Image 1 (cartoon, one colour):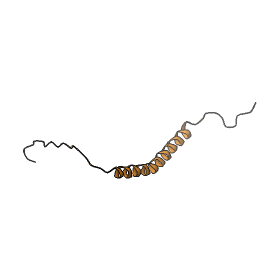
Image 2: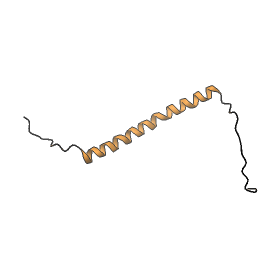
Image 3: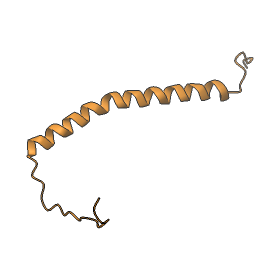
Image 4: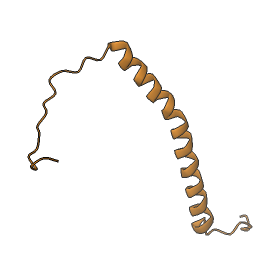
Length: 65
């Protein structure tokens, strides 16, 4: 580093073609599918754990009317 003075940079324009942005969004959409599957699996595991620990307190063999 030089004398500790900060260099300031200003970006005025970024030229990105429209179809390149479309391809990026398609890739994000495709990447979201496995991420959603993983999140749902984790939610089911956590929900199953809570159901096993704090499940219904009703007796399973309750006498009928």
